[in-house]
Image 1 (cartoon, rainbow over the protein chains, first blue to last red):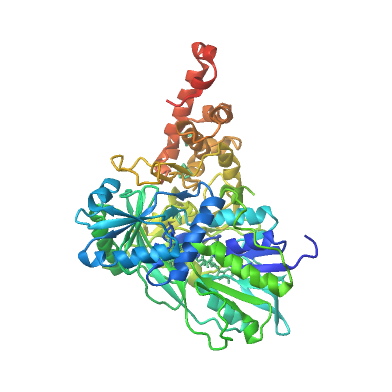
Image 2: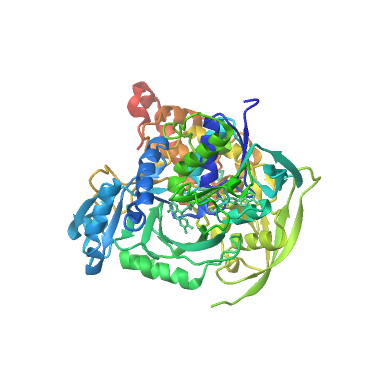
Length: 388
Length: 249
Ligand SMILES: Cc1cc2nc3c(=O)[nH]c(=O)nc-3n(C[C@H](O)[C@H](O)[C@H](O)COP(=O)(O)OP(=O)(O)OC[C@H]3O[C@@H](n4cnc5c(N)ncnc54)[C@H](O)[C@@H]3O)c2cc1C
Ligand code: SF4
Ligand code: SF4
Ligand code: FES
């Protein structure tokens, strides 16, 4: 790969992992740096839902379409990675039932298969659900292991030559004139600082993206917005349980291994490293989760934690060109800074698609025409990441 | 709610290139809910950003935050500081695996033994056996219990003395394949564990099962593997070799 362009990816979450995979497949030389263990940011802590997209059909059909498309792709490229038990959208009240028609129409428009189930049928599938439920809709949701899916992207990227460097923190952006030419990093294993030169730098640091932007003097107006998740002991359902209702707090229960996980809430903080887990949110998760599965209230809490989304505000300096509607991808060339691209937002379920769009932009910059192959290439098992 | 108190953390430190490891101490104010992981994140954020630890899921599902807390193998993310006796908490990396830095061990050796057992990540779900699966789903499935945390390997006295010992996690994975083959080659897996450094090496003290945070019970799995192999080695069984000799009980 001598002579190939070198891309530096900052951030070892789902987005960075999928990027490293796509970039290597297109023949680029790739280095990924992560200041902690890979997936230690938002990615490892997410809810573990392989989205069908149904959650977004009423508010954000573009996201819904992207989710279902990615859902089918991931099943193909990451076999044996998901609990494929489907999901239910459960109507608990008469008001919930009024959302049924728009929900079904929305799903149909976005290509999400649905099946309406009577109350009795639903309770045969999930006996622990609130017996007063009215009806439910089956959709192709799934459960994923939040860490092990990105590990598969990383393992495959590594296999194809990408350098993955955990415990390596970017402390400054390296410039040549007005062009970003790499980054200064600190290796926490050796306590050494050094510079990584690169033709393009991609800022994939999620809720930390504003910090990297600040180092580069570019505009990424971001507020970290955490959400609380609560895991209780005991697997109370086999399918993913959602409330048939406009998306709100505490309306999803994702079963995983021997746990049931309820989420989530949202508020805004200043520092994504300093996430509190407010007791009131923990109680709210249990209360709202128990509306769907009453026995949840009796189960011991295994853990309560928070993960932060990047909430993106309007940019002052940008050209008005929106690169994607479902996540944010900024080419800072629009502010006169070449060689730096920021990608934030989206979902772990759509990381592959985010990486495809971003890699297209990077390739266009470098004059590379190699097509994206990540829809077809089957990923290595997660264990290959550490086995090396 | 908050009954706060200050706890002294004594943290194992090591950096590549330094002559020897050392311990640093930090005071951390904790509430009854604070976990050891949260306390270490606080230390990293406020006192020393170079502190290396592994964490990801924060709910005992990824297995990265295994460490020795006051000498005991635990997951830091579900260990509350209040539940630890004493005013001082000592945190050290797992034993029997090479140290990369501070609290981080190299999992390469773990996976070198675990991966060849070829345990699929997804298994049948045994929960809610009365539940009917929905149309389009043949049978309910779930992720395997083992979260690959390495606590069992750290506590195992045999792993400490025999670097070639396959160890509790790999042997438990082998048993899962025998129990539920899912298309894997069971005779091959049994042959891999039927060795001097395989399931016969275990001392059956069951420390592994005591520390496993994820209901894997490696000690029982090792006993079950031995039982299967003994039945296979019985002379009258050997005569009929082949297929059913390897069948899981
Ligand atoms: C509460 C909650 C629940 C969610 N549930 C789901 C779900 O069920 N399904 C789903 O598909 N999606 C879900 N999501 C969305 C999903 O978690 C995110 O879209 C995804 O994890 C984002 O990944 P990322 O790689 O962009 O960011 P991150 O995972 O945050 O990665 C950024 C990385 O950059 C690193 N970094 C920061 N600064 C530096 C630096 N200076 N140098 C080097 N590295 C640095 C960080 O340590 C971090 O690891 C959820 C999100 C939240 C908040
Ligand atoms: S039972 Fe066997 S594998 Fe488990 S800790 Fe003891 S010696 Fe090790
Ligand atoms: S068997 Fe238990 S203790 Fe050992 S690695 Fe697996 S989950 Fe951890
Ligand atoms: S952080 Fe995942 S097991 Fe503790």
